[in-house]
Length: 146
Length: 76
Image (cartoon, rainbow over all chains, first blue to last red; front, top):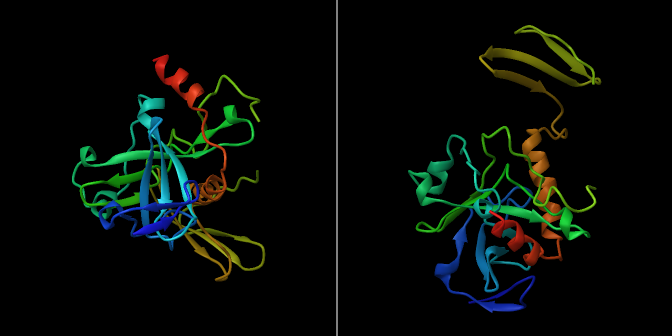
C-alpha cells in the first residue's frame, strides 16, 4: 500500500510494516497505526510516521546511543499493553524536538516510544523514573541555553 | 507558590467550583480526589508536558544535526 509521508512524499509499505498503537500517542490518541522509516545515513535516527496521514510524524532517536546509562522503568500495565514479558522484548526510542538552533535540541526521556517489534505493538509510555524530564538537552554544553 | 498543609480527609477549594480532597497517604503516595466541572481539564503534569512536547515535535521540520550527534556518540 502507498502512504503519504511528511518527509518523503509517497512510500510503498506492506501491511507487515504497520505497528499498531492501541492508545495512539499523547496528544494524538486517534492515530493508531504507525510505520518506522529508517534513515539510511544514520542508524540512530528514525521517523515514526502515521500510516494513515501525513501527520503526525515524529523524529526518534535511540536513547541508549546518547545516554548510555538510560534505564527506563516501565509503569504498571505497560508490559501487558505491549504484549511483552521482559524489557528485552522491547525497543525504546525518544521523541526529539529540534528548534531553530539545532544545538538546543531536546529529547523526551520521560515518555519514550516503546515498541514490541515481534508483536508489532507500540505505545508512548510515561516512565516511573523521577530523574528523567520531557525536555532533556542533547548537547548541554553547547547552544544558546535558551 | 502557595503552600497549604492538610490532613487526610481534609480538603481545600480552588475558585468557586473546584474542590480538592486528600483521601489517603501511604508512604510517598498521596491519593487525591478532585471535584471539578466537566470542562476543566485535569491531567498529570507529565502527561500535559508530553502532549505539549509532542505537538511541538510533529511540527519540527529541521532534522537533528547528524555530525554533532556523531561527535557526541563517538566521544564515548
